[in-house]
Image 1 (cartoon, rainbow, N blue to C red):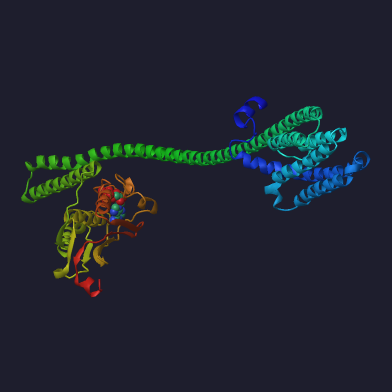
Image 2 (cartoon, rainbow, N blue to C red):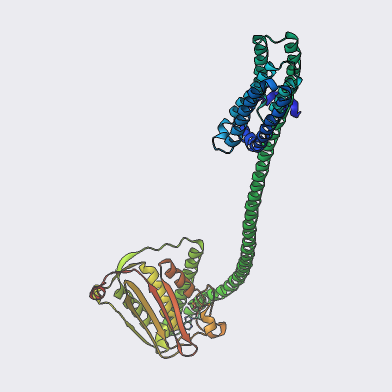
Length: 500
Ligand code: ADP
């Protein structure tokens, strides 16, 4: 697999070059891995090349001077390459330097071989040179093959030119070619091995990087997932909390609905009683009319019938208002009107009220604005109804003493207050008297026409108009009911004077 696919697909068969940018990297890698070995090899070769001069002194006495000169030149070249290997320029020229020095070394031996053709040590010497070229000096296989073939070619040509015995040339060439083929094969295999090794290192590096990246990605994914899960967890906890709250609210709403249902039933029972009382009054006294014995008695019966009728009408109006509120169809219809006229109407109405007259209550009122400067803009009918409810309650729940009502202007809003010296309301009851159908206590309101609707209706009206109602009260001492209604004053000298 490594030899087959790798080799055929990726390396050039002859030059053994990579087809891509790996070639560049491989050369760098090859240089880094080889230059020290090359250095040592050149030292060894320089020594051997020089040391073999000893043999010259034995077998080639006639040419000793020439041979020694050749050896000196070659050793100088080899040492020059050795020293050059320490220079920075060596990296870019090292293969050329190896090629040239290898060639020079070989040519030196060829010269000796030509001079002494039948001495075996020089042909062996050339084979040693081939050996050194292919396995020792790290010249690339293609270069060493080319150089070796040129060397053999030079030898044959020189042999022919110097008229050396053909048999010697041929037999030497046989050995040289054989040695060269073996050397080529060795260099070729070594280079393939080196290149495949390099390729594997690169691939392992890449795979490692990919694994590292994949690891990193995985870690990031795990971190993101953990974050998501944490936030989901948080959301779920919130959701559970929220649901628990909703459940609580639902239970509360259910309890309230049940309570409201109970109250409605109680209200209906109360209502039938409340309606029956004035109805009985009307029917009973209407029957008695026929039997009246005097004018006064007749007047008394007629008055009772009228009072009962009015009470019935008020009750029915309250019920209608309530059902409108429940149905959400209650509309606020605003208009401009004079506030003092309204308070006067209230006063006139209650100054002849049976409660005030019969219990001899002192009813007083006060206006904040002057009669000619008291325009306000709101729903007159509802406002009057609220005021009537409050003043009526004060008259109803006061057995002796006084009732006082007044208004003031705060900013451009209305502040209205009714104070009485009546039976008062417990702190506990103050919390719910504004709720529908709620009365302070059944016992304490008995004997008074009471439905528990007036304050609830008043509060709803006020809220619809943007206002608020409150109470301050002490049992057996009296009560203060007051409300605010913002943004209703149209134009007032009081406001103008205050710079508003
Ligand atoms: P109603 O007067 O028809 O019962 P309201 O809603 O007007 O209905 O009043 C609710 C309850 O508040 C009354 O039943 C009464 O107990 C108490 N209340 C209201 N106004 C006064 C007041 N001025 N003094 C004492 N108690 C009051």
